[in-house]
Image (tube, rainbow over the protein chains, first blue to last red):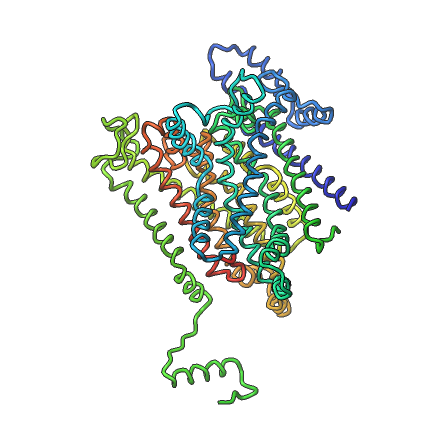
Length: 327
Length: 312
């Protein structure tokens, strides 16, 4: 187990290293950060040359990557094209995104398991058909369409119905709110719709996997044996069935973590959250873009999260299913 | 009637057909394709979805030319709701929304089909080589797909789409950007299928009679892997439409003067409460088309790849 973990971590570091190199090249050649300066006739060539030197753009690409890499090895993510250090901007941004991603992931898992079990137990019933139809509808709907529906229609109706703003549709909180309960309520009011948006598009596919996995398990001999020896349906379903049917779902959830992070980028932009996804988006499309150091910081952190998540899922897989051996 | 013990397969079939004919039954040999087509025809939802999808393709391509407004034409009706003259209403500048939705539908479908075509061909070829030969190509491919699994795909697409944004009024560029990511999924799938197929007896027999690798791959392996390939090519169309819409929403998709459904929805966002028709017509078109493609993919999976069938 220890050797297995070590190998996984080393492989993860190697992938991270290659990914950072490729993305650095890709971002650097994908655009010219000085394009806007150069397009402005009022800016003198000297200023542009100074900006070029400041961004180290006159150095060879490989040297720039090396500077970045050795900086990161010392815990320094470099300077953004805005002149600010990248490092100190990261955690406040990540915090905002986690406020959306963690509740949405947990909620999606709960709903997916619940609906998957319901669909499998009541296979081909009206409820099952309805839930299947909804799942198909949701994974055929773009994230931002859900976001617009919720913020421009649902939230407006709810707020008008109640008479004051209950559901906020822009920003992650109201700046200047004080007092524990006020801050908490304010945060919840801002978070409900983004979390709902991300959950709706995430749970749908997972619930299908859960349903299929449980149906497979319920048709096995050991379930028939458990029923034959007189256990209650409930016990067979939850202790013998669901425990085994959760195993494949764990993998799907962990592999989808990267997709959730991608979805979070769009949800943050739809709801105007100043989170980590917005950070990536601004680094790619802001006034002095592409901002390669900021993109790289996003990449390293997002990819690390995905790798850690995958390793944790594989370990959980083994704990849930003793047949799996780590070789 | 006892079967002769040493009968060959052909005469056994002939005998069976003869018996059936005597009993008044009409027996025809059916090819794999006919069997699959039969199974697909029994999938009512998939069939209806296919009809809907074909209808949308025809209406959007023909309709965009027949409808008396052009998508870029500016009328003197500003921000009017649906009416007889403008069934889908008009936007703030006076564009006829029906014309825009028709053109946008055609663009979105075209882009997605191009993505699916490119990524299927490239993914199948690379996956086939990796799965059949193993070795270097396989190692490089697997490491590459590891990368794609680790880096959120949207980030890669954003970088690439930003790189081509000055060219992206031509949808082909966005299609290339999407295909640059999507082929890896197809390649993984084909590789996996080939890894198991190449151990089978019918491939061994081809080695034994000295068939070339090229012949084995093209004549034996790909036809046997065609089920999953076709299913995933179809699902790629749905996925590409979703992702192109997301890129358009972020301002990095197909650029004006071209219109796509995602772009129309994105530009309606600010006015969605006062001019809801600007939002819901393109949104309904987009979601229904993606839904129909997903159902077609499901029907194809049941028809072509019964072993893979998700218990539905």
